[in-house]
Length: 100
Image (cartoon, rainbow, N blue to C red; front, side, top):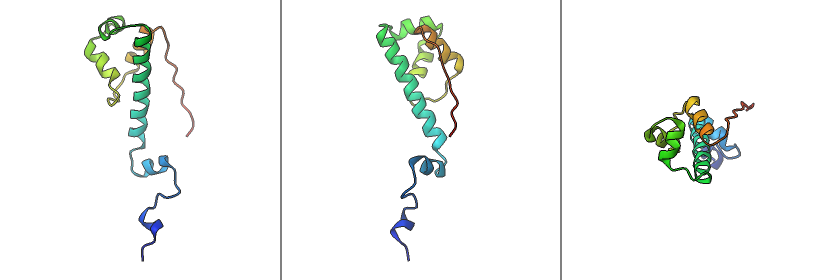
């Protein structure tokens, strides 16, 4: 005998629990974080009216590297690149580890 609750064991749990059980919480969190970072950099570039070429030049990197930084799905990101992008926008990076 199969009850409705047994069919969907996630009823009543939160989304993080579901993702954790599916072993994808870290990946989903990384993509979400990267989307925010890419959006903030894009917004900063727009505010300063910086083209990708000009931004890459200020960062002393290639346009390909900048494109990778702005790619919301690509979660590979070095702190050096992030700090360089922030500096090019007149900002600094602040990272906080919070309890879960």
